[in-house]
Image (cartoon, rainbow, N blue to C red; front, top):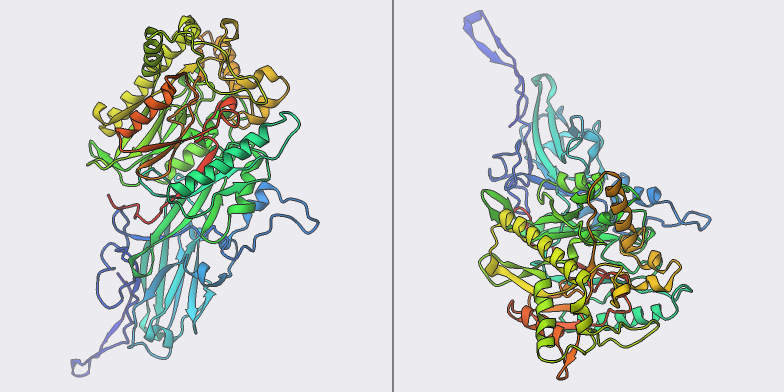
Length: 637
């Protein structure tokens, strides 16, 4: 609402009153009701213009994309730019609008026409308050967008006709304790001796949100590896995986080609980035979104390719710092971040879903504080921490996933079930197949495991590992039940098995399968981006030992983890080929996994990842990533 001053002179002769000129009313409007237009004729955008709630209040975007691909990735001498230099360049880094696509990223404001102003009238529009440097204004004059400085004047003619303005945030919200995304814009009108009136409008920067599996997959990402000396034959196998992935993506109805990372030899495309997005309502009420690629808080060069290859029109990149490069570094991989689809429970609503991340309470390790602060500061997906201390890699994608469902809730949980995995082996043994090899995978550039079902079931360590896994998985499920209200009937239990990395003495193959090759192979392929998968766990156990704690035995997927796959659509799921025992011509684990997903309405396709990802303690999900639909307004339940 406008405020102002006016003076009144009361004459004494004949008690005749003469009113001094009254300043015209300043009236600034924004898209408060989020319908994609700014109403200057009615009052639909007036109520609540100085307040902001999840359901009402104007939204602006952090304009951190690079619509015209102008940002350099190398300096004049051809040298790669530093991480800081890469992050510094984006569309909001200067005062120039780079074409129509850049203009589309601006939230609109309008001044209500004031035909009554005199020729002396002038106006200003400026971002005010202590956070005024967090946003930038533009004005459209003669069909061209120009930067509007706080000192720039609106003419009397512009005040009479009303003007259209655009505003961008110059960054995402990083720490709500320092800035929560709020921007206040003030419109001031002065008309000679009539004084000045002002009107403020409050906007808030759109939160950076992570995707959930109820959002349709639109594009798949993967790394394509080049040959390297440490492991002859690996690149060939990994390239086969890429080719097969392209086939499965097409079969799932995803029209965009698979996008490939090629520069930094990091096969774990899930781990160095988490695709996110920001959005507001655009013209015609349609969602206008910008993808925001969230770089992992790790010393991981592959994240640079997000700037070098992906950043562009409607795609920005955020890096929030690097966590500790110690035993906790694995927790900062983005495979340790998944998103529960939208839900409400006990008075709490998460219309855009809720993040889960793994922590290691046994060792007092959590994901990087910078990342947790960033995610929490978005104010929409409050991260929920689950226990992954029992896993050598320590990522939530190793045991839990969320599946779209045609139910009132709209989703189910897919959960690894070690007890079901053991039961498959016990049934095979009882039917006289104990001498069958546990794995049907052929030899490639390294020997395939040779243990039998009898040997596996005879291993006390193996049984203990799966008892521990089952116990910890149940405890995590109990947390998810308490937080979301999901029931056992909505949980799909998928057979899986886990084992520690030192079962060689019992004739079994541990998860750190490449360790037998020596050298730095595991350091090259290890999922945590800094250390080999089980090195981090060893360091954590040593640390716990120094503190007088009983160390926990960490495990990883023994048979390829089926839950560690990719939801390609609401009816098609891509899992790692199981390579389990073949009995009567059928892979018993493959059959059981397919049956489990069929109960959730999914057809399961399989892709061989044994020599490309499984031997490095990861699976299909770990080696891929997905860009998903952004059209659903994040504020609507």
